[in-house]
Image (cartoon, rainbow, N blue to C red; front, side, top):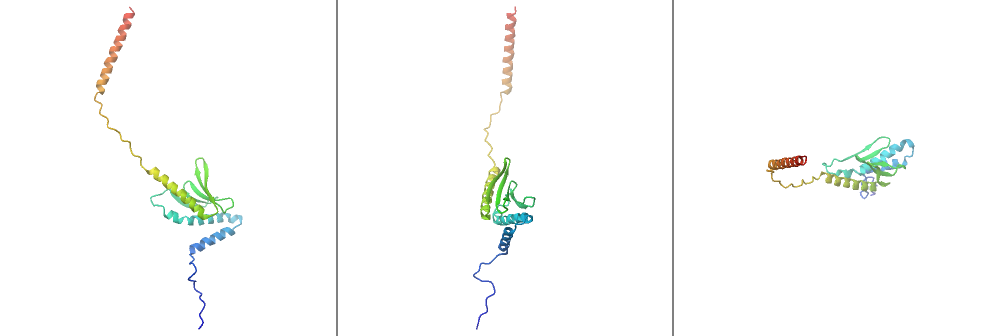
Amino acid sequence: MSEAPNVGPNPAAKPVRLRDALRQARIEAADRTGVVVDLRDAEVARLDILNEALDPLFAQIPDRVDIFDRGISQGDTPRLWIDIVAHVVMGRDKRQYRFVQDTRFGRVLLAESHDVGKMVEAITDYIARRMVEREHALVATPMPVVAEKKPRRGGFWTFAFGFIVGVVALFGFALIAAMRSF
């Protein structure tokens, strides 16, 4: 009796997820893209690949932390925004990721790589630093302890004494000045 060939899935083979297959197809399509018109689409596809790789990282950020707003902008230069000041753009060769931060002194390059894994690491470090900065900013500084001051009871009498001394001194100077003029 001959056995029919096994046409079903190979149990020893690793199961392929549709998401992984789509990611691989996007990478291959982005690699093949060489036409100038499709360069922008290739940039968006590569940024989308990085965006999907960042999903596990952003899933770990607590809901109460609202300083990150991730998304791809579809302008003249496609960008993957991490927060309001940091984003990823594609390099001149359209294959290299450039993670930059806008500062008041200009744009600062934080990381640059062709590898998605290295970019995820750089963005993870950036997010961790930003979360620590947020925690420091939210920490309430303790109010300085002010010792209780004794109520001032002699305020009026101090004024009255000073006034009397001033009048006497003025009268004394006027008297001395009048005696010299005789």
